[in-house]
Amino acid sequence: MTRPPTPPAALDGPATEDNAVLVAKYFVALFPYVTSTGDLQVWDRMSGRTCHYCANVRDIVTKLFDADQRSVGGADDIGFGSASRISADSFVAAIDLVQHPSRTVDRQDRVIETFPDTLVLRAHVELSWTGSRWRIDGLEMQRMGTQ
Image 1 (tube, rainbow, N blue to C red):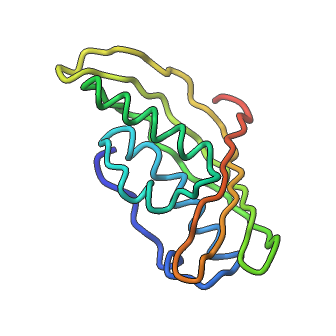
Image 2: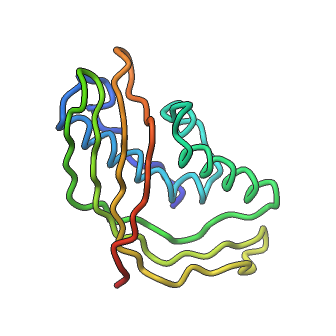
């Protein structure tokens, strides 16, 4: 996936449950893009200091590209999402998705590693509105099954 997902208008606020769902879906959709391109600009801008998942993905992508490797495939089909407000500007969202098989390849497109399963996942996303932007405070991927 070499084209970034389209940013939703919800990135500009306000802090509502509907916007939290759209922003969480967008952030989850960034994963195959960053692992394919190494472009972490938006990922870093949205990642909060407390988001361990965000930091782990950043480390994985950095190591991948430092080794002249990248991910191919692994597109996500983003499905249903819901969000609950936990304080004035903080939300918890649940996003259902299907992650398709992928592989890690080197510069010559030789396969280094394969991820052959189609995974059914639920992303639990903690996010907050800072007054000027959305911040991802935490994210946990729950494996629901395979297809």
